Length: 227
Length: 408
Image 1 (cartoon, rainbow over the protein chains, first blue to last red):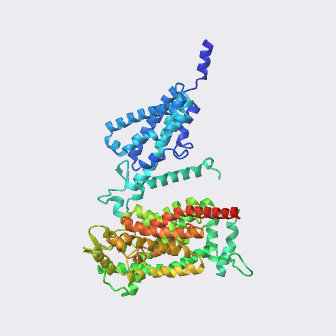
Image 2: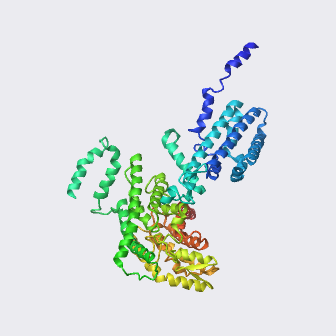
Image 3: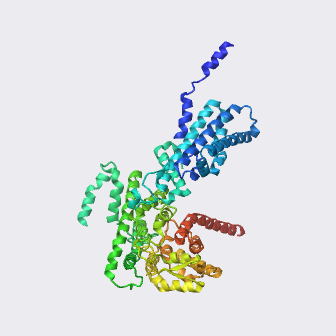
């Protein structure tokens, strides 16, 4: 009996083993949920006009994926497979409501700007995708890390896109003016610089995401598809 | 020429495979071919195709564009002086040479920036990808300044050119692979990115503000016809019936003026005569497609007639023929819609492509005054639709022949 317990203990891997670390770092680069799996594009287009929105949205998604993954993984042996989607939806929906209420309570202005997109986290493909592909088949701790990794990958891309769009579209970064004051026309604006309106329009987000994918794939040949 | 050729031959081995400067071969090659080729021509016997290659085609299009460029320089110069004096009644042919000078002073920098930036981007991609340089930009670089408003800041032209070449062309694989017209991509980019510099009252006359003087274009004036307060150049408000509004419009921009091109507008697009001269050369050499040009014009005319039939505001009542003379319709039709890469390839597809394009150009222009650039948007839209049109034309042909096979 004690032998068995010891065996189990020996099997248990350290919390941050190489494999677990990979769960967090992989989605940041070569398995990014947005650029490689091309999931969650809609929200990446909609809420990357300002860095602040991107950061808040990214944090919200990290929270939901990580906790959701953990909960689903803990319940994975209890969930009948025929109704698993419904159970997953219930978990996501509850977590999203928590995020929504927290935002409304503590950051009402951001909550207003993000408006419907917080609620739409429920439909974000990344979340259901991770539940189905990872949490249903893995233990809670790796699932939690996987959620953190994928959430970070998503948030990172969101912020990257938002940096370009806010810098060139509004001339600010996280709300701070970079190129001078647009309205009074100081700084760079006095030299004839004008903000790029196209950056604020959604098509430009798509083009920026496309360029990021382009750069990533040309740097890492293994990601290129064969024709 | 001989001594230049000698120099080139002397240095050739350096750029060949394994040579010291192998990496820069694309640049070397493009330079030598631009100067010395195409040396191969059809010499004797029957040939399925003649010696017209990409570079020669491009050169012919540039020659076809020269009338537009020259007229554009003069017209720009004219309105420069008009703005300076604040007097629209300046006779068109007065002070000929000072107008030429003023126009060249505005237009040539646009041309230099467009070519300089565009070719630099092409060079960079050529060196990175190791392919030989594409000639495609020779025409695009000429078209871009011609579709710009005269006083657009040069850095905007540079940004738009980079965007158009990279996003419009290089990511699809370079010349011959692009889905949308490169020059129109540049214009569309500016139109959406910097709307205040692309349209409006301050744009068309070198940004010189004169009291009580609007510098709008014909289309800009027309767009006000849909609002309550109708304005026609000279800042006079026209009230009353649509008939009065149209006759006021015709006074400012008569059919003849629009035909000759003596109206404010983007650099090279105002003169229908210059466009027709270019069209004649393109059709004669077989580079431009007669089907596209004709069906585009017919489509535009049909659009104008359709609007006349509905006619709920003065803009809709504008004679259909006048629509074809303003707003770069002729320029877009001759030089943009016929772009052999982005247009439909099938014979019947070209007719559909042209007709719908012309129709849409007028519909967008009239029904949405916020987008006076109907021609640009219509051609870009049809560029995207062209592969679908071709697909269905080919499928229809396949079906028809299958049917014949079965009945036989």
